[in-house]
Image (cartoon, rainbow, N blue to C red):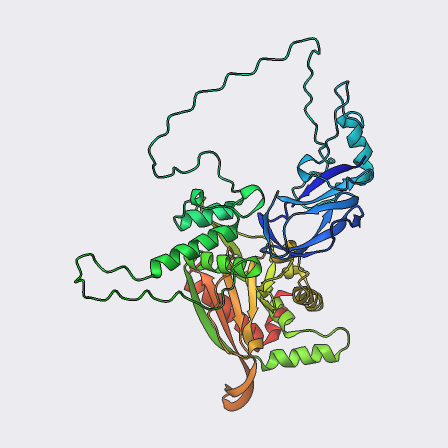
Length: 472
């Protein structure tokens, strides 16, 4: 007889508490192998294929495509170790009928666990158990057959009917798992006890809170009813039309970007300085490097090398602020993020240990991460841990910008388009390749002198790449 095991949405790492089902990779009745991906989900960080640690037959799926599930919610049930029940009950997975001696029909629960151990890998995502599945036991009451049956309890008298009153808030724990849902409701003064959850077993999801907030805001936006003392002949004003238009849920990558940018603007006192630089020599240097043979070097890779050297001279900008300890934490490694625009929104992949990479290595890593971003294949590890961001918005054909810092970092360097412009070179007017550089920085970690020194050093390296030779 098959054991029906329930596989729950595992911890996807990096503090993520929920995920949206994008695409099911299996149907009910399909046979799955151990560690076979069964569903593709989208988190606030990336698209992830979730493997099932059990091998067997899929007996149930929980959630349609587009449904948001919290970590720990049931995902699928799989029948392992035999032929599945034609009509399995997910809630009673792993139970068997008790025999006369008080054990299950297939033996003890320990024997059942041993029977399915060959159908389980333990190789699942972060936070999910790796010691084997828990086999549910069925409680069996051992009763002396000679003992008389217990007398039935007398029926309790009916309580008197109280007058109708306003319904009280339900007691007991709230059906909420996600701390993000609790925080969203708390920040907007919304009582979660007034919401009926649409998740499994009434679980309150983020979408439920957002829907309740939208309804509440719509009611508040309606014009107030006329006062009771108004003349009877006065016509009541018509209620304003409800706001219409396309509604795009702030969830997944879009929601994560919105939350992070809002937090950055709320917490970080940022300031921006900028400078124009003559990039003619930088472009000539890149052309000479590419003409020498080997893999082509990108402009972004050269700018990343310049940023890394500048951060070693001005480590204040490679830091973060610990608000709880009221400390500035200067970070020993340079993990360089770069902004990449994709169909799913803006993402910031991170190049690890950028300070120790060559221009050729940086070019290859930028290309790999950019392609993964376009394919939606970035992992949460690819999108976290950055210490400084390089934002090349010149690809959009603009010269300047005042970008928002990628929280919890302390600074971001923006690079505009490199275009021919009139420029005074060696005392004469000439046409040169000019670029605008901007630095947005957290004013808590440094003052304008440090920020200006960093930006000026970057501009000097752009105008004369030989400056880098002093630090090589």
